[in-house]
Length: 129
Image 1 (tube, rainbow, N blue to C red):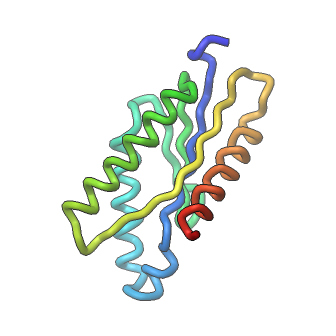
Image 2 (spheres, helix red, strand yellow):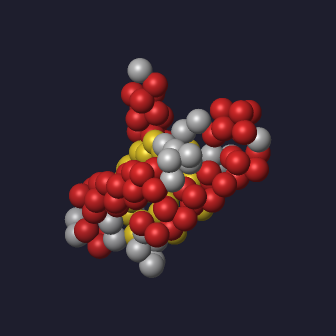
């Protein structure tokens, strides 16, 4: 299957938002959400889609994206988060992400989304340990 037919889904979850809201208030939590949304948007290409799908969760739909290109985008996001944290010592962001690829039109995107969600959850659990 040619890479142009691949669709990648990346789910990103802002780590620790409840703690930020409980400790500093929802206004501060909103700032963290705005910071991560800006980073995600800047890391994506012009034809990629970004949506907030939960209180602290974002979904990115990446057409014409194979696994290697998806991993490159995730690495770019992690690097941008690290740069943000170095520049804003009082505003430390942490995000967990999961990537899944729909390689052809026989796999429903809902299944790809579910796979990305599972991988994000595994990444989040790995950070807790």
